Image (cartoon, rainbow, N blue to C red):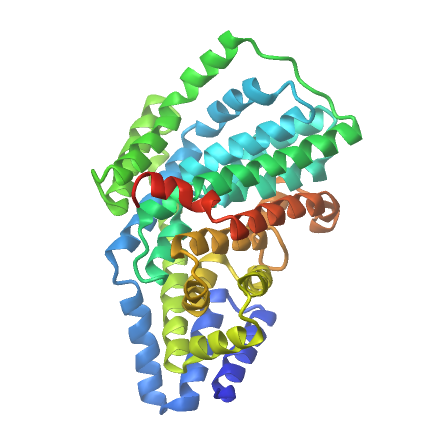
Length: 431
């Protein structure tokens, strides 16, 4: 194994992050420095720039700006209020009712909008004050909001699963979307159990039980929003349209829905488009930079060397998967989800496939791992959104976060060691 390129890559990347360099620039500069170890300056600069450009030359990636736009339209279109009202009729009377409402509404909102940050922002601003009014501690509400917001990245449609499909060399997006349902719902259930136990221990109030009439009324109100999941996922699974075409249909559907609810108008539409464009630009820059680093690592044979080293430690699949999970959990603390998927999929996927794991299952495992990272400092974007909306500090939120972290890690290990939790639905549809 050639150690110099690895040392240059790791030290330059960590060093740039440590001094506050944006993630995309840290990835690009460290990739360039690694290339300069092996080849002259001009080819190194040209290669990195070329790989950034060609990394974005993919039809599948067109789905990402469309899903981002549909998420922005959903966030501004009054969807969150209707989903919260529906969730309230389902679980409002249980211990920790408002916390459970937060989890269910976040799962629905995240699945529809495809954005953990949009879900954390919407749920935090709507449910946060209501939870405080009912006697819940602000920090507990923030912790529940932050962790539950990430479930929407596993439950489809999910941009990060599209990115994994690209990084893995073409794993079926339809299979990945179906595979995400049970792990995402399982994670949500574990979060609800922890939230209910915590709320009962602290003596938080419970709401009144809703009648079947109220459940039905709120369901009908939320139904147009929920139908988006049926249209998008049903169309992809049935083969009516691709994931990219489904994303464009999602934009059209959410736009019509926003006008129907009278929450979006021609006056605020330009701002929605601008917000979606800014988010898309950030994501695409990260993808381009990550694709260049992925190529550089391949050029330097780093994935093959890491694979050999890991398989040299043990040939026991349980041990290897445990090590990979721990490494991904560590990576998630310091790196945003999109670059982490693009950089580490080519490293770890060959290892797990040698162990007999399905690439679809590994995609869900990777996303679940990195979802935990979104809730942890110093790079946890969802953590910062949740804390910012609630106007509190990270230090105060850490204590109620810990049991929720344990719930997420427990779900992760179940998905890792029980493949049918992930693969049952795709196999049901022959995917």
